[in-house]
Amino acid sequence: MSSFRANLQKAPAKSSRRLWIEAIIVGIATEGILAGVLMLLGNPTAFGPLLVFVIAAVLGWRYGSLRGAVASVAPIGLFVLAELVRVTLGGTGGASPVQALTIGIALGLMIGFVAMLSGAIRRRYRPRPTA
Image 1 (cartoon, rainbow, N blue to C red):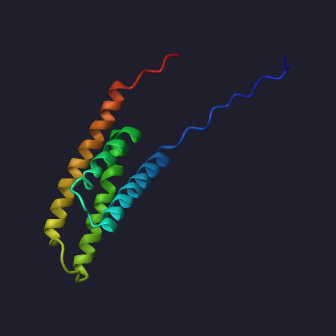
Image 2: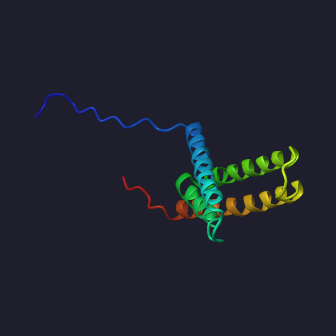
Image 3: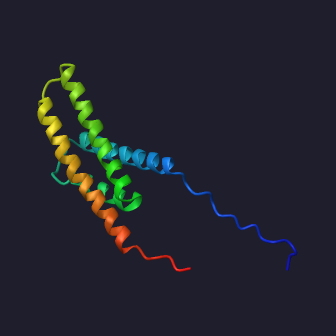
């Protein structure tokens, strides 16, 4: 038995700002990878875009209702902004600016709902710590 006490320090808690930044970066990275893979494959099936809802549910589960919803909707906002810039600079094909904005808003609402729902379910049914 040692005469010295064990130094049992807990890891420092993550700051709120760091959690927000981490959630948004993970959301942008995962949805960006999904979009890149779908563009590379030429979107062979209709099930590829449905993975956006799975990503939203995972983000909501991992980061909570609000952070998960923001992290899953932020990439959609970037995609809509990129489409608006592309159309403004004279890109051919695709949707009109009004259609792109309407699709982005509708998709953002649906994805945000999925992320908030999964975060709320996790918060509701998470086992309580026993101390």
